[in-house]
Length: 158
Image (cartoon, rainbow, N blue to C red; front, side, top):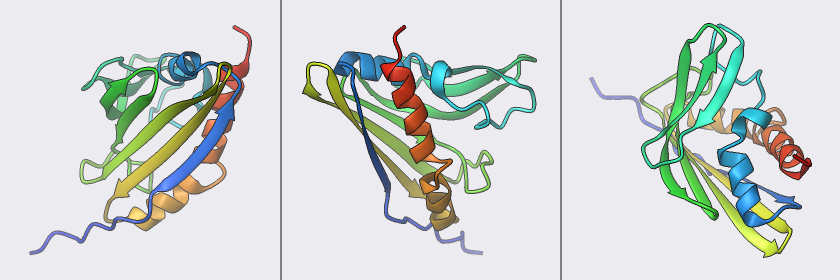
């Protein structure tokens, strides 16, 4: 029996400008993801206590629930502060863990001025349900809404 054909749709590309220096833009995205990642975006049965990206290649991108449970969404493939972060993504279009999904998210932080950084996100997907996954992450509640929450957190005084 043949394995199902994996579909590789065009990547989802989003960009947003944040009024902070490049290093802060990277730091808020990677080290302070817990402050801005939507709590509704989880597979945990328990309320989310923390969302974490470990600061090294091979590190986990995961969530911890109030009950101590954990869910690993993916892993760090490239950790190049303050300019680039690449994360793997193990979720399918039904937002279930799926080890057959070959998906990654590349985030570039481009300094445009001392206090202005363009954040460029590209989500590349290879999966049996690739087109459905692309539609889900490109929807308003996907990357557009997530990046808006990130930008608000990055520009907040803290």
